Structure formats: structure tokens, C-alpha cells
Image (cartoon, rainbow, N blue to C red; front, side):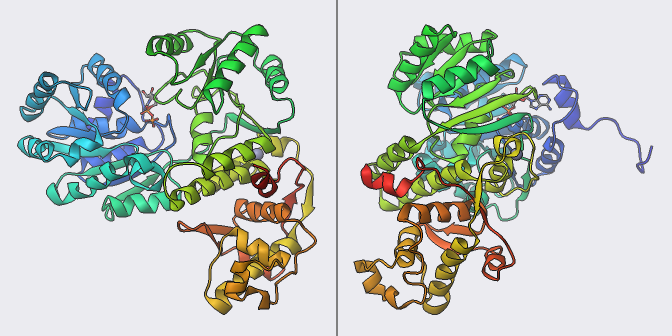
Length: 529
Ligand code: ADP
Ligand code: ZN
């Protein structure tokens, strides 16, 4: 034995084997579990399907007391508890779906320490009686699942999640583990700040899914293209086709059935029984295609999904990653296929323009969309781009469309320098930051009221970019964002330089850009809409 003393298997690996029936930990799990068992805080970033649940379930079983799991996924709580019960783990949940009697039973079990895991909807923690209940039992840990809900992204849950910052004040000795699959660098920082997790160790798993082949195609005859894709590459395979609206879900499902493909629709407008029936057929059968809105898939764990096709552009890279991540959990080759066209951009810009919420919220939605557009337009490896979005590095993968057939590109170095130097000058000479619109207006030499107001017509870069049109400049900006040569800051979507921008400004780095086809011109599209 290399170690100083021989010891048997750790309590964690015993629980892994005896309770969950697994032989070994997945990448990252063991370190996280030992860290939490030792009583420390953790922030866990792991892709969907990576195995986050065990990271708090095992410590909850090993440590004394009840593990309190805060989760916004109320609809899944019963399933989660049932699954644990089937393994012999004592678990319960408290949420708004229960009546008083059901709640009392769970509360008593918690206080008596007769359960190991208690799932709570976040809004419960805003109720003083829940906090007093928690005081009466022994808590082994707090797990905050879907922790990105605390950040801007999780708009809907935000007030509930903000209450979680008080956990550490009330129970300073109870370790907390926050888990998320959808954190970018910024979200990451926000989770840390909002949950008061400054002391927490960060565990960041790789987001790479090497067996998924990423492909994004130009949308011209979408139905025919989808059918062709299914027939030529995934005949008889199980898969998901995502559409943005319920009506297109219905239409596409009917279209596929007409063309001999075994397909069913799934969206929130269908009654619960139909949805449950279609979902269970998908899980049970080998080759069913589910045509769905994004309502489908959360918490679904089917290992042999061979493809995920997006018939419409996803609203964010997070969404795209999460949805495509449902393919190939068994590690076998799978395809993530997306058809993308001008109409998608028109539609989504319109939806953002009319969405509820304040301007800041709309700017965030725009930022998410822009990042998704950047992924669509990249001339680089899609995987490298995707990983970069999550703050991770990768090398060209050889398993995505841009690696397999590199797109036509043009030398965008000078255009890039014009954009970057405009931003540089505004920042250096005037201590000002602006969004894409103003930068483009300056380059085009447009005398708008805002240009007047800030005296931007006196800048040396004013009007130096008339060789490209408005939409083309936006394309340049998006591609700079995509290549990490520009970044978006704060709620206002202001553009700022990155460390890498200097190389371009100094002429030390070339900037290849994807040839912008006629169909991708969001600025023009937005006007038309
Ligand atoms: P996440 O919450 O990260 O999306 P889950 O915790 O639901 O992922 O785990 C995804 C799947 O992987 C589940 O079916 C789970 O049982 C399985 N799993 C997790 N850890 C292991 C392991 N160490 N060995 C085998 N399977 C595992
Ligand atoms: Zn690639």
C-alpha cells in the first residue's frame, strides 16, 4: 500500500455501492462528496446528467441529521422522493401541492430525524414557520439545486432564491452545497455573492460532451431538411425535435407521422394524461421521436436519445446546451442538429421586444440571443465556442460541422480593428461605454440625436466604416463577441474590450470571419419586424 495506513472503503463509497448500486464515482463526484462530508461549502458546476444529485445525497446519508434540498422543480419532487424511497432512502418533500395533513406527516418525520432528505420549494424558506420547523430538527447540509435561479437568469424564482442568503446566518455550522448546470462566469460570480458562498470551494466539471456531434445548418426548406436528416442519419432512432411554439409542435409531429416516422407531440397545452402517456412511451420504446416545446425533457433521464433536433433557434446558449445535452447520455455517438434562418432572428427579436418585464430584462434576453447567434455564425469549432461560453477551453474537436467542413470565411481584421478602436477611444478618451447600436452608428457616421448629444461626430473613428452596412457591422460585433475579442458588460449590454482585444488592435492577430449570408442580418430583420 502506498499510503501511510491502510483503510477500508470510505463511508461515501460504501453508500455509493450499497444504497445506489454503483461501482465507482463519476468524474468529480468523490472530491465534492468528501468535501461536503467534512463540513465545507461547495459550489458545483456540472453539466446536466453529470450526476449532481449524488453530490448532496451521499453526504446527507453519511452526515448526522437531515439533508435539506432546496429545489424549484416542484413537479419533480414526488418522482425524486419515490426514486429514493425505492432505494430504501427515507425522504420527504414540502411544497405548495400538499394539503395540511400531508405536510404535518413530513414535518414530524423531519423533527424526529426519521428522514435523511427533505426537499423544499424555495418559497417555503420565506415563511417564518418553515424556518422555525428547521430549527427543531438537525440539519446535515443545505443543498441548493438549480442554483443559477439565484442569478439574473432565473428571473422567475429570484425573490425566493434571494432568501437563501440568510441560511448561513441562521445555521452557520451547516455546510451548503450549491449546484448548477448552467453557469457562465458571470452567473457563477453572482451565485457566490448572493448565496454568501465566498468560502466555498468551486468544483467545475468539464462541459464537453465529446460523443455529441454539433451541426447548425442554414434553414431553407426546414421540413424537408428535417425529414432528410431523420431518414438519412437516424432512421428508427429515439430523439427529440424541439420547436418554439405549440402549434409548430403539432404541425411537425403530424408531418413526421404522415411521412412514416413514429412521432408524438408534447407541449404544455396538451392534457396531463396525454403528456404522461407520450413521455412514458418515449422512455419505454426504442425508436420514438418526440416533437416538443422546451417543456419536455427536464428531469428525463433516457440514456439512448440518439439525436436532438432544433427546428427553431433556441433563445440562449444555456438552453441549447441543456436541450442538446439530452442526447447521448450513454456515451454513444449522437447528433445535435439545428436549422437556423433569418426568420428565427426576426421572430425572437420581436418576442423580446414585446416581452414582459423591464428594459434590463429585455437587454438580458437580447444578450442571450446574441450569444446563441454567435454560436450559429462562428467559423471556429462549435464545441470550442460552446465550451468558451461556459468559461472552458477546448481544442478543435473534429466532430462538429465547422471542423468537418470549414465554412467560407473572410479576413475581418480591419473591420475588427475599427470596432475595437471605437470602443477603445470611447473608453479612454471619454470614459464612456456603449452598446452595439451606438458603436455601429459611429462607424457609419450617422448623425443621430444620441451621437449629437455625446458629441461622437468629433471622434476620429466617426464614419470610418461605410464599407459595410448596419447589419454587417452587427455581424462583425457578434463575431467578435463569439471569438472572445469583445465582451458584454452589465445590464445595459455595453461592449468592452477583453484581454485578447489588444492583440487585434496592435495588428498581432488576424480575425477570420464567417461569410455573412444574406439570410443572417438581424438588424435589418429587426426593422422589418
Ligand atoms: P444531474 O442532476 O447532474 O443532471 P443526475 O444526478 O440526475 O444528474 O444523474 C444523472 C444520471 O446519472 C442518473 O441516472 C444517475 O443515477 C446516474 N449516475 C450518477 N452518478 C453515477 C455514478 N457514479 N455511476 C453511475 N451512474 C451514476
Ligand atoms: Zn469542432
